[in-house]
Image (cartoon, rainbow over all chains, first blue to last red; front, side, top):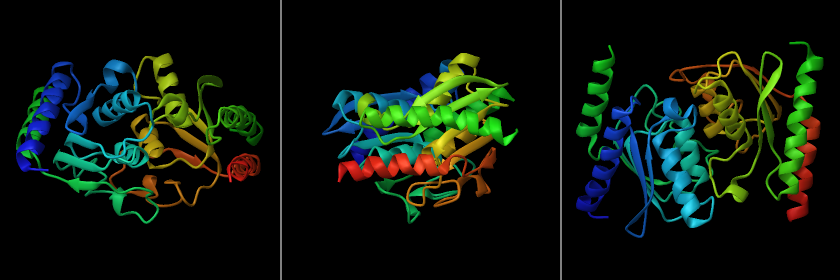
Length: 151
Length: 151
């Protein structure tokens, strides 16, 4: 994929992250794309929904899977503004996401390049192609502003 | 908790696993218990729901969180017939589940005593007490019968 398109999709995910922040949620946004079309959108909302699983990636993948009528998102790309946690990385593997594009690294909660580095585990049953650092400055700025305002 | 009660709750989870098998889903069941009361139930159903996140544990925790009006299940016990995968173990940590009781070990997909051993990771933000092997013979028998019938 040309980097211009990768950035265009990340901008959509960043808009969802901003919406999460406005709702008082940690600002993370995600979209799922198949054949150039956005088929799933998610803004982080565990507090709003009373749902520990309601991370942006899970919401976007659930919407996309409903749209495709399958629990598998083979051939789809997932754009998310923050490095996925173990829950979301596990769901990405279950969904057979083809390509994962993420923004900011997350040394504390990330599970792709940090912590359990889930896609490097011998027992993982699916590994997406992974591209990090797209729009990471904007994603990090949103997170820093959010947590600074809460202190 | 007396082992008799632990077994009683696991029997409820095993009934949900049997229901999953009847629906053509991998037979895994889960319940969430708070103060002796079952507040969440889940039978594995990713195929039925077109939802890669619809594992028994996630469904049970979502129901319990809705019941409590919070994304946190502090002080709750989770009973599940199979060792949780990375997605579910991550969700268990997000939900702050107090005690995890599981049945059969899962060397291929488990993430508690196998693979990433998620609760042993330095970056994990919550570790439940973990009790494995409760009702594991029944849980394993259900899984073996299910996969044997599909060959």
